[in-house]
Length: 225
Ligand SMILES: [Zn+2]
Ligand SMILES: [Zn+2]
Image (tube, rainbow, N blue to C red; front, side, top):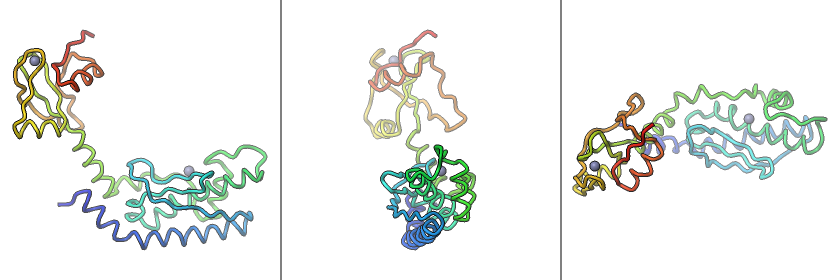
């Protein structure tokens, strides 16, 4: 059985190697940039991204590129070309814009950017499909889903359900009890919401009001739509 922590531990074993590869590749394209445009920007590489949707980012004023260390370790050279080189091209464009190389504002992924990318040996297009099969992303998604699990509890009120988080649910399974503030009966476990396909228990309650009231552990109040 694999879980996120295990996948991360395995991936991180390769981190020192890939981190070195990143800085070697930056040195290479920095030399190209120096030769081609007389621009040799030093950047800080910060492997601090942890999310599911941002694979890399560049901050020109801070001269910083943020990388995703798990995706770096998982995809290695492919990630370096796709993301690190791409982000470095943004830094080069930033410096060239500042210097006045362009008579107009260079668009983030415009033709000046594509031109820099082509000198670095990449097309500059943002590839995202590759990461769909990422082990790390799959495990991270599962973990996220677990955290957002929903458990329905019923009380004496007709057709009302109380939504509980996994934390509250496990406390209740271990004996802590909660009462409905309206009917004063004890809440009993009804069912868990299935991920993805489940529309949940249909309550004639507006989503916001539902959450607000549920957070006060009170009974859900009907709101006529
Ligand atoms: Zn970009
Ligand atoms: Zn009730």
